Length: 345
Image (cartoon, rainbow, N blue to C red; front, side, top):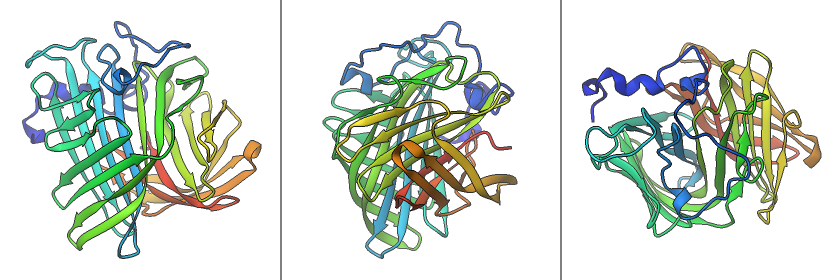
């Protein structure tokens, strides 16, 4: 669906706003909010939660082509509720946005799709699993085995994902606190997909293999009103260990959280203040100064690394603009991963 034909109200939940990035610091009245002690129910929780205001199914992958080059892909489906319920037809208050991208050292290609729920154009079914918007789809018999496809004006991809480890629950068993005020989300990941597939690019078709990471998160007010954006890292180390870490930026200072994932899939939650993140270098991207090289330290795991963007220009000029791209890791640990940065003006 062409963006120019959509009514203006469709963009309201995602406009760039005074209260937090994409309105995530606005009031949650009328919506359900996360609570500690939630017992996840699968496969149901792989599906949508329309009583919560925001939700996403978020896949990133670091890949190596049969040409020896490094690639990154993104596949994301966002759900945003105008009202906390679901119904069939055009009066459905659930809105959907899809983002897809392919990144190399030289190019960053992306596309966006926008849809309303209730008419079959976009949605998520928990079992057998299917998430789609237009002809983009992530589907499989379950979340262990998935196919993934998307296309834009100058790219397309088809991937097969196979989980190689357990789900990971961030924070307190999936209750992930985002601020000193207690705002939170439900947040779990599958960080250990093995990937095979193909890219179709203007330069030619490429067969690829690599690793993918999927994040599942839903909430109604995950940020405090003074928080304006975040820096989020998902890193796969050559040792087999993994790290999720984020820094939320606000007028009252930063709030951090991390999850250390051992090679056997066991996890350790890292509370606020114990992971250190510091920008080392910025680049001028889309008229903004964006950090494209970082230092991360996690003393509890003897981690001291530099994280560098494969392509500093990995800017998503979508309805809500942000930076998203693959990164390389050097220092005490080596590897690859993904970095997302929001709220930079």
